[in-house]
Figure 1 (cartoon, rainbow, N blue to C red):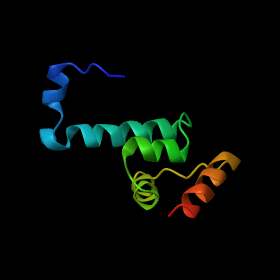
Figure 2 (figure 1 turned 90 degrees about the vertical axis):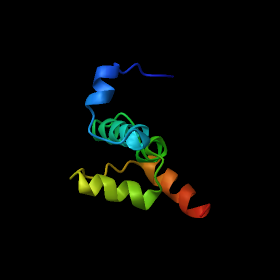
Figure 3 (figure 1 turned 30 degrees about the vertical axis):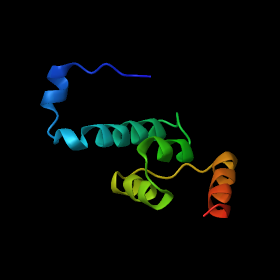
Figure 4 (figure 1 turned 135 degrees about the vertical axis):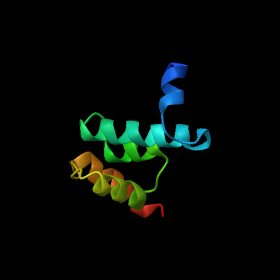
Length: 82
């Protein structure tokens, strides 16, 4: 999937081009997680961050962690494979 972003918007974002995609993916992951549209694990994957990094990002944004049984299973699976 590709999201069309008008060039005028891309040029207006105050980030170096080298960081643009990375930062936009983080923002999308945080927004979707914050609206309970993605699980922690999937949002972390979208943001391309490890468990600790994504937890820190959520904390920096003042978002509380949603914690369902599915997320517990994902976290346990993650812990087993580290």
